[in-house]
Length: 504
Image 1 (cartoon, helix red, strand yellow):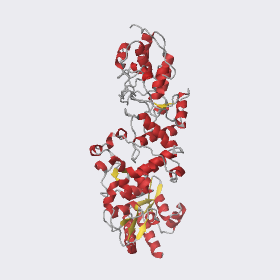
Image 2 (cartoon, rainbow, N blue to C red; image 1 turned 120 degrees about the vertical axis):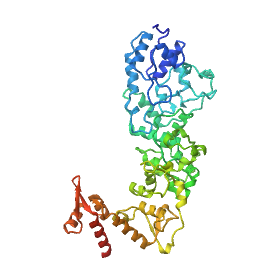
Image 3 (cartoon, helix red, strand yellow; image 1 turned 120 degrees about the horizontal axis):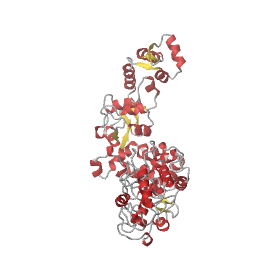
Image 4 (tube, rainbow, N blue to C red; image 1 turned 180 degrees about the vertical axis):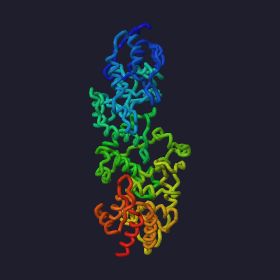
């Protein structure tokens, strides 16, 4: 195997893809496949990526050493260590691997330095801090997507115009968080705060779908036009109160189809995002969110379907511009919006009260369209003959049921009642006598069950010792313990609750 005529050394911050392209370009071989052919190897691209992302394997470096005629083991170790950084492999982020399979560059840096920085290929970077410009994945001249090619180190592979001859984008403000992250990634330790990284990944997904409630993991970043601009917007969502105020206001326009459910549902994307953050960011801080005295500057919030998982894709929604995704809710996100417990929220959707999207009836991740609630909101009963019932009513715990179960029965017309006009689905109006009878029926449905000790203490709002005293007094009766944990007979508990009610 002949040696290459020009045999460069890797730069400290150079990406491995970029080094291979630079070796090829200096020896008049520009395409990745041709470069690998010259080395006599097959591609060893990293898995899980749509695009080219070459892994620094021993085989590749042995071939490089033969063609460059010098030892490269120290460089291989450095490239390998960067390839296996722990925060690149975390299973807890929404983007499970932060590396991009498509090229993104700073044209000014390429012109000045002649190599591709490895940090440009990470999903969490938006800018080149040196020139304070957004990284580009499209040619500023012909607007075509950049491809992996040795010509990237000179200019656009398509229009062949040099980077120096192009009019580049104007300066863009780099946030403190991104600047700090850039420096941390460039340090030798490579240690990053993963909770902060998870927040950034969440913000990127939210920036892509700002009016949705559901943001599922994406295995890798799609080859997306304007990726850097979305990442820039994600940092602003974390740091800028003005951006968050503008987002909140635009939710009222983009989610107006659920306005009948109240402000909590209209502004839910902002509130759920803030609740899921692991650190205290200035942008979505409570005081900043609620400050409506100063009009917020207008920011545009586009949406892209590339950040919707395949399992959620729907041809009908896609053909209508994908706005329907904005109104999808899971049981968990419904609980977060309403403040209900998960048990109560699950009861809310039992049976055929609302149709699950794509008929996913038994999945823990069932999805429902909030607009369906318009069909179940009916005229209220006579206010003089009814009481308003809230989810935190202590009677639900005492009778071993939930507000969600009551709402489910009202929706299915098993019991006459209606939702509050003022509070939407977050309270119910029901005749007092019917409500008390419904509670009794729910209580005796549980009479055949054996109850956990925690259920009893929670229902009676008492301590474990109080329950033991009631057992000693023969008011409650022990059932057969399970896994060494005591249980109470359901019949004895029901009788005790009924007697207590009569005694009042």
